[in-house]
Length: 139
Image 1 (tube, rainbow, N blue to C red):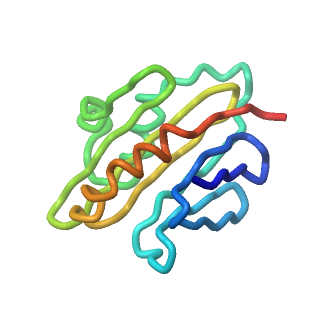
Image 2: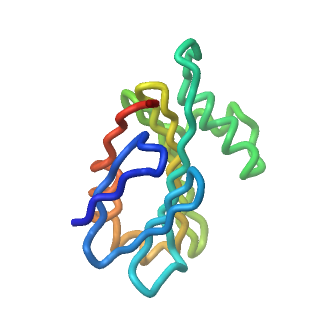
Image 3: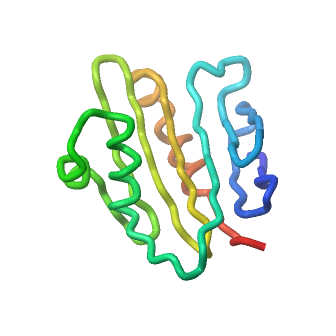
C-alpha cells in the first residue's frame, strides 16, 4: 500500500501498490495503473468551525444537482453512519457511489464512477481505500 497526503494536508489515505493517483488543487483522483476510465475522486473543503453540518442534507442537495429527483426522494436513499453519509446509484452498466465525510472542519466529497462489473470486482479495494482515510483537520 502507498500513502497519499492531500496537498493542503487535510487528510491522508492508502492506495494499493498497483493503483496510482493525480492531485490537482483540492482534488485527488485514484485509479488503476494504465486505466483511468474508472476513478475514485476525493475533493476536500475547509468548513467554518461554527457551521452545523447535516451530512444527509448536504449530500442530498449535491445529488439533486446530479440526478432528476426531488430532495426528499434522494434523502431517503442516503445512509448516514457517524461522520459519513453515502448513496449508491446503479443503472444498466453504470455504478456510481457518492460519500461525504465531515470531521475536524474538513468536508470530503468522495465519488466512484465506473461500470458495474469492475466496481463489484474492486469493491474490496475501494472499501480499503475509503476506510483508510484519516482526516487531520484544517491547519
